[in-house]
Length: 239
Image (cartoon, rainbow, N blue to C red; front, side, top):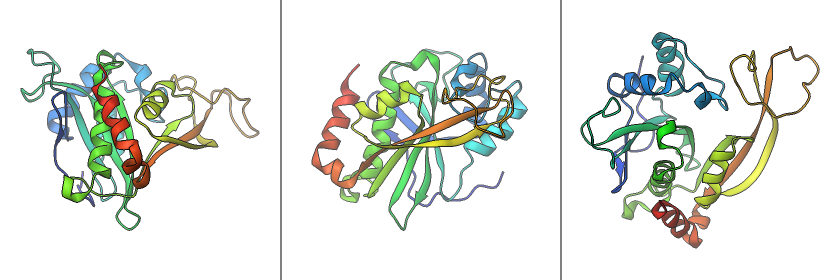
């Protein structure tokens, strides 16, 4: 897989609870696969997965969805509060709790998307997701003088029925901007456990197809300096 340098500076992002470290396929992919392969529901709101074997996982998920490009940089989410030796420990600093990525990065418009968030079941409804998203927002929207990128806009686009992620987005202070109807068709989605938009299939669809709507939440620079940063930090402190 050819790697391309991400268009913005990349570094580890960390607080006392969570560390986001640039995703390394040799280090993180086998651990994530082993921890996720019994949890097909992780992929219910995404066109990718679930995966029956490691080769498909590497081809579609790691070399596809998480591929490092000029516009995309994936991170492994490390829970620093879990230090016991276990299958999920990857580098002695904690346990692999999931993955998250910057996507659709655009230096011209100084914007990007937070996406590809997969929190492993053992770490859902804990401090992990809110701190991972919060670290991403801080890095993207803080001024360069404070160690951030000084971007103008960060968005998070979700399957409209992904209630868990929507709750996180609202809790972190992102604004709801709207829903794009009939955004995505997933062939054979029913058989693959995909969540659809709960509407009748449109003409031309086949039995078993799944259609999804897409909801956008965003935090812009003026939201951030106008109280959004404080709301994000407060959400990160909640356990």
